[in-house]
Image (cartoon, rainbow, N blue to C red):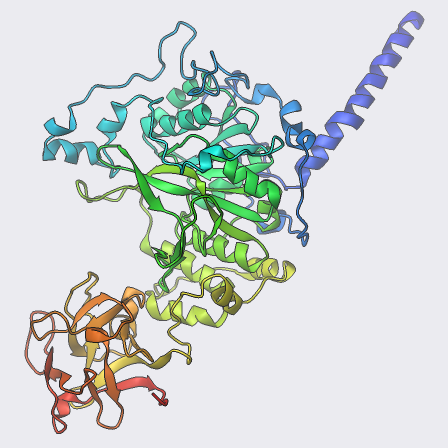
Length: 629
């Protein structure tokens, strides 16, 4: 029981508690609730006081919690807004605090003591290794095992190493606004070796202005290796603005990124792979473009870090298109800019920046996609079709280790092939309208008993955001794309069958340029027997994504597969539907099937002098449309 003289003090304490709840706790709870819960259970991140191996609870895996908005108005940010998250950030959630470590200089924008213990020693020690000239083939094989890059070479390199600045000279003179938004950099990893992961983090801290880097969020997607447990947690205590979020089990790249974005609090989210190195001035041009309009989604030029030598080299990926098998490919025909944003039909997937609120307005990633693969197609289609833009920013450059199977042929991550096929077919089903049938003709079908899973939630997003049809996307975003079912360009398609022997043109599994095609008993199942004859006269190979054409230029009487050049010559085929002949432009050389056993087929496909009476030279396309040439 309080004494009478203690009542005023108790009253003041009660007023303070009420004010704290009304003006601080409740607004933060409401703001947090806008993005939905990370998980139903209480989330955890590693801090100084918590023990090892803390994880977040089980995923809701429900896109309904990801708020969808119809707003399309650019949201300009003032300086006070851009820095508001910094002012209210709780430093206790970052084991190493938020202040720079050591002295700041041009090469260490967050201090020259990151990764350094209080006694001045480096927490991570490089391990000496032989020079590239002394490394034998067997040593390379061992060094590449389980990673498809040279881990021993990586372990021998400093985490703070210098890399070349390949930006155009004009980029270095650009002045950016003072009120750029902040960014939370999200790294997702699964059993990543320590040295490339730490080097990635160091490069971001060293080359990103403190006022722009809100935080680094490390999302461990269920790793089971020891060095990513206590050793990583100990190292994070020596890094500013860095925290760890752990998934309870391996959930896959897409879900891990969503949880990383939900655990972040910057104005934008920048997703990076865990074996990269950012270049000087990498983030400012990305944020400047988002600052102009939050519906701009932007990615850097991706340079190459050699998987064996770890030498940083200029060039890699910039403007990207896709094949009908939903694989990535460069669009070499588009002009590049030295400094201006370059629209890109799709993203590479691993590296991009996006306004955080816009990310969730779009619906984040498709929650039914598994592990990885196809997500870059799905989110790229969604961005363009639902009112956003996707651009490559040439003044931003990030180096990436592109794995190689040259020295070790194993699989780094175990991902069943049908998982990637399922992901891609989901993207096609939701976004590609009638063009999804082309994808199904090119790709292998799902194994019996496998399904795409529910797509209602994604179709609801498409409806709510009033997204455009895929035909609009092809006409306005990717007009270079060859459309194999477009009657404007296509004369005939399907199998090319010889009725006399019931033999069809067949790639016989060929996948490389210059390979010979042959003939095989018709199986009527698309795949290796699917071709398209265009009005330009070229015959495109479906199993090679319609980018390669049948070519008479092998010089040995065979028909080869070479990249389509659309300039006639050896790739021009004249089809006479009355006689069934497939010949060169002058009608001198024809395709002919011979009943002759080969190692892979009872038939052989050759080029021979045209003969009107030979039934072995008569061919029928499954689908043919006559037109006036």
